[in-house]
Image (cartoon, rainbow, N blue to C red; front, side, top):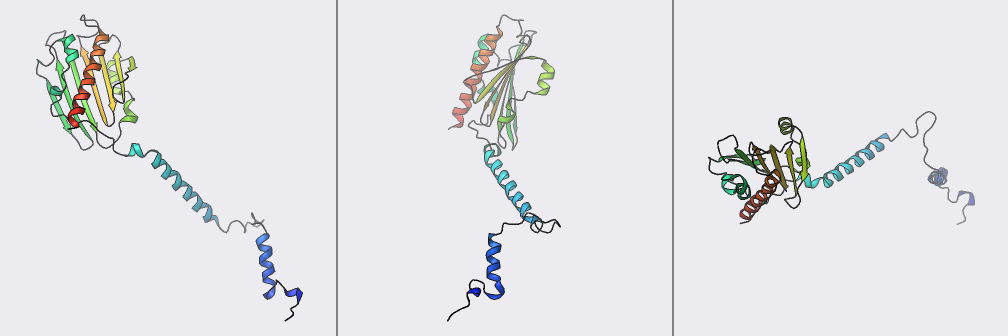
Length: 234
């Protein structure tokens, strides 16, 4: 059957030719009357929602370690004054366990805490040592570890802060002007250790050198971490 060449590729009412022209014609960017280009605004909203979801998911992935509960490789002490022997400090300040050591514990679902307070006497030259262990069970204490305590700074005034290498994940020591108070803080995973020495036994009121006090604090803190970590691994 011979067909009319003028009808080849046209089909019914010339629609095939129209489809070919429409396929080659670029999509309109908008008409003067504003009708074209406004037909599918929901596509932009959908695309924005998809991008926002992707960014949110990426943020959760990037900060997944902080959202997860921190790892704790230390046991919860039942008597911190027994675990904290303070051997190095006692070589400088004498027997710190003689005058009724004070223990405190707090078992909270978010933080398990323990505090021990020691002193070497009841005179004006008394040196007081306070040690605290906080095991963070829910949130990572790392991002806030370097934030100075407002109350601590307000009570003690200005001083100097130094980092301590080779102790936990991070460690810093803060000494007030005159070294009347020295605070050592150690971060290791979800555990935060705080060791303070203060009183008339510091700051030049005794022959004890403040540098020796700081070194002794670091040594005693290192021993405490090893004691709790060793027992926690059993």
